[in-house]
Image (cartoon, rainbow, N blue to C red; front, side, top):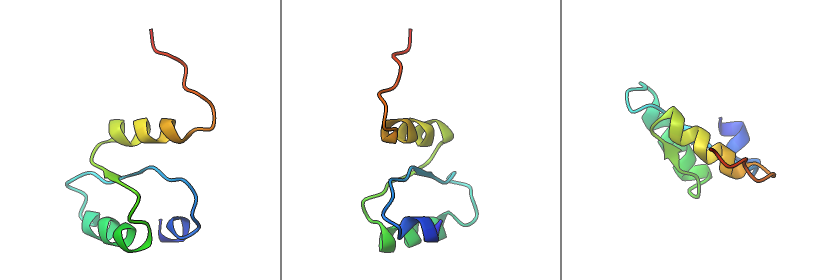
Length: 61
């Protein structure tokens, strides 16, 4: 993760609240990319990733 965070690319990052190294993820991103939110769930992370896609998402029925 650290290598990708310093490259300046658009990222969607998630770390479950029970993940043992969550604080490491939060601290690394706080220092390298304070503009990135660390999401708590897979659903929130995927939603953020879809928003980063270069094409508009297909509307859900």
